[in-house]
Image (cartoon, rainbow, N blue to C red; front, side, top):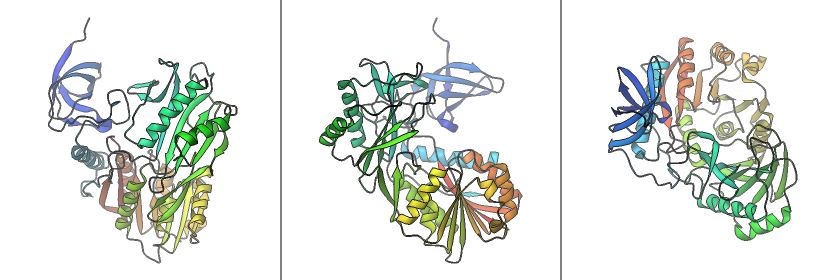
Length: 451
């Protein structure tokens, strides 16, 4: 029996890209569809306050709808908005920031600036992880997750997010694994070998890393593989093998071996050099990261006498870029590997006025040197969950002159912003920055001043 379809008018886009309509006096969130469209939808879930559904047919198309360029758009879960005109993507991302600040934060006096568009809307990513999966016509697939199915992987032929070189590498490695009969890891039975193919690129340097993540054991006849890869795709500058025998299906290794080249690539941000290893964290859109940080510094207006405390500093990119603008920088990061990378990057750029500390932010903020107000400005770039409540409380008590907040989650930013305003800060301006075109994600930066 075919499902009953209802005719709906889509009026908006919500968080995570779901279309918004109304049915029976309730909001209805739909997968598929764009504002201004009339659709036939199947209601898949009814809840007391809202409904959920799936668009099955578009009766009237939106003038904002465009043809998606990627051949995998209907299968892939990556580029949710590739069929939405880019200018419209930007409008909805800015609107999401405004809604979060006003509705979650309860802040109505904040100026939200125009969203800064990405310099590139395709081929902007410097890192992609492709999964091996048992099944498929060739006995396995190598690619990305099928939309809405965490346990299905489809073969990627051409992804528009990283580079054409990346596409060539996927095709080559799929053929090589087939020809050499290298077994693919089965995530249900936990047997097999090949798990992930990670590709990292230096967009400003042209360096390329291939990181092969497998189950335990040396890569079979690794010299043969390296020779064949060099002959086919000489642009690759280093190859790394990571072994991961844990059941958790993540593209990271417990044991790492460099098979070819230096074991890292280098990238530049605003004339600073950064060394990126297989498991390093680094902004995935480096050219737009430069724009994000410059936008943030324009808000912060740091001076030569300022002392900057960089919380959740990761591999140190913000602190390193700020080091020539201020007297002193201290970075704090919980992940030890990231701290080691930050120190390496500081040494690589001959920066002497910066120190990095390994530890939890909420604990570091209780240290004596912080309590003595050595740092008059603080930068925070927390994970999606935002600031830990204890860190937020301690930050408000320290009363630095300025707090620069960079966020990848407008909702948790708005929550933290409300707490800082209640503690005596003012938030005059927030600027959204688009780091990931064709997705629903948006970053922002805002500046808080002590009253």
